Image (cartoon, rainbow, N blue to C red):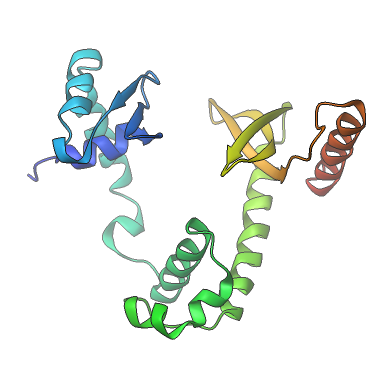
Length: 203
């Protein structure tokens, strides 16, 4: 039987926050953990506040064991394209980055042209939209949230609904705020923003 590593437990039970802080997925408590000190602080929190964490993790892994991807049965072309899309999106780079000879030379992924990620991202958006629309067959609500990234403010529109006995908060759209976003004209613009997204998602 394989030994469960602290790194796996922490990645599963904690979400990355800012300034070396991590948020517990059980109770939303924040714990600071410096890279040089291992996982002691987070593991200590789990032991003190959530003594059944090992059993919960083991149970989750057992449920995942039946999935094909657990055994590596994933189409290599799809996996390669997913990794390229992940590389571009998470690092906020242009699609042309996949054509760069230096990027290709430093990556272990199979090279692709920039048209391919664009095509598959379009197909991926359609698939995700269809999945969310199917899940939102019952009652739902809207929720706005604001965020700041490199001194630029953004407003996000979420759909809130229950599915499979869990509350889902799904990001539908995000747009940069303009100065004066708290004024009446801006409120009307936000309303139009919501109306447009509602029509797009067939609400």
